[in-house]
Length: 175
Image (cartoon, rainbow, N blue to C red; front, side, top):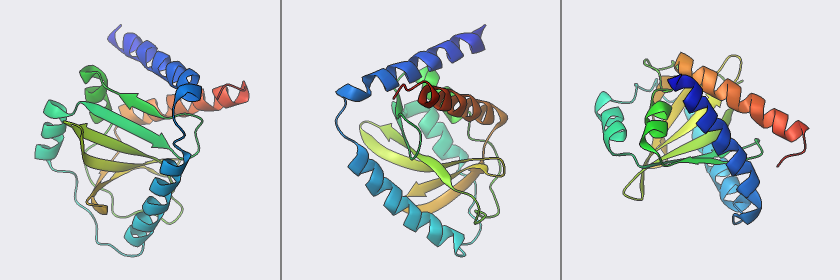
């Protein structure tokens, strides 16, 4: 029942985000800037940065205890998303699995960037990779790749459902 309520809330967030797009300021330039910077940082990582460790448990605990805002910018999906409710933020943090990845395969492409804020300050950013072969996060600190984590099974379900809904929205002409 708890999962159904969360999924219903998530669906409402997606619908609200897509309906609210006309009222929001134009974020395309911000998204393009993030994409350009990310492409450079990620390609540097792909070129041979040593394996990155998992995000420290202390940082995850800090985010769990103090994070008050999570923002997503998707590069090719027809919406962005923000979370401000602690249960949603904590569910989001559960999408980060344990264990690092050995490196970003050249065939992998990030679908978006996630920003974690505490007291209005971005304390952590993560590139989200989600495709058939690529399901992980690369966390950035000071604009540089610092940590990598696999995606949890709950994270895989979340992104799969979200992408399916986004494609359905696009198919139905909702933007």
